[in-house]
Length: 140
Image 1 (cartoon, rainbow, N blue to C red):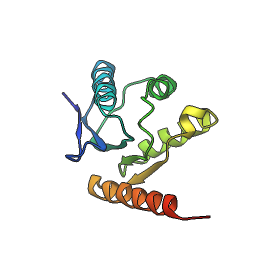
Image 2 (cartoon, helix red, strand yellow):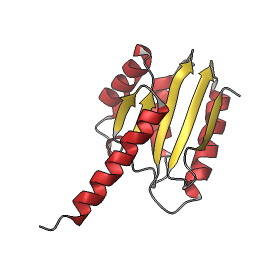
Image 3 (cartoon, rainbow, N blue to C red):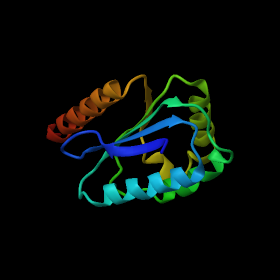
Image 4 (cartoon, rainbow, N blue to C red):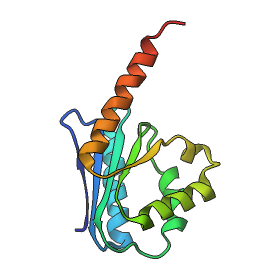
């Protein structure tokens, strides 16, 4: 299988998706079902790292799949979604999706950013969590 999904950390707070080579929609759909099952197994917020560094081809119709994918995302995927890629096509697809669907509540809940390695992405997630805890402890 050219798409894998696993927990990045033992605490199961970051879901890691890795795309390798070319992939097809049946693999993607199976990966989504697995990710939804994993997210549904924990009662707290989870971040996501999506690693496209080794992906080569994307099947036709990618942008058309974005609304359904977002709609099907469990509510506890509330932290950052970090795309790991230096491929300009991945950035173009993301920016096109943001222009097309960025007005929707479902799309706006995601804080999407890009990194060059999954390790850097994980460090960004940890920094965001520290900042969120610090903000929550600030008295006004």
